[in-house]
Image 1: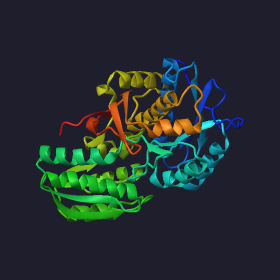
Image 2: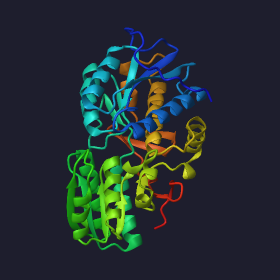
Image 3: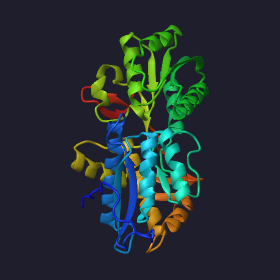
Image 4: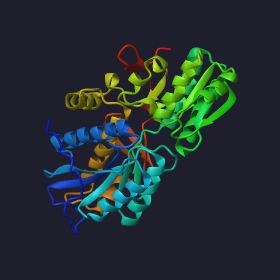
Length: 374
């Protein structure tokens, strides 16, 4: 496998919008520093393996290689918007990929649209984020997964009631909580209400007590990574014995080690699981582990799929792709075969891989992510 070297910033600009003919340059706005650095590195590493595969397999054609031009945005909206503007100003950059959080995607989108550069959002879960012709989203959306896990866990465990811990200042998370509720209610589970928490909150003791006082036999935790883990830990410390359910936000390097007793066997949904992957997904997992010493998680898979999809678009955009031809090619996507999720479809620029949802949990002693067995 040829290892891709990620460029650290913008190289010389051209006026063609088509690179130098031998490379197709994609700007990626990353978060390897800041509060989401752990998850952010997964996206970057997955993207790098995808670029390796694209180049090794000659996916783009005509002897061309994909080149990732990396700039740090720290998942800060203002900083990421500034980085997007810098990348867009370099006319050799054909497209952009970025964004874990919805507010960051919301800040970057107007730059991409104004500069007419195609943008692939690889995270960010607020509904209706894709906006053709310039913005697609290859995020495996958590909403269908949350609905699936809510219904499945309720039926397996015979749940009768649920209370909800919801990060109320994040629109994407609020919409995810609605999906959890839909799945649970479809299995006949009554809603005992919710307790709101906030981004960057660190003390969850009071919120945990309020939830337990509702006397539910299940509690759903919908929040971003550190807040979700903190809330689950608080429920564990308070002695809650009912069923806890959470989302894919608890995926990430070092997460299990931070709260092993609390997270053990708490179910959450993923779309990608290395041990159950298809041939393309297994190759991704093998090469990722060789390069980084660990199995890829759902976030690494999203980074991979974003760059793989960009490459599919570049192939369709012709021998000398431009921003315009790449925009059209990505906007015309209806399905993509041979992804690490299998065949995926697109509707209005939004990827759908909902048939591949898997229910998993961390398991002691090593925190391996394995199919949840109840």
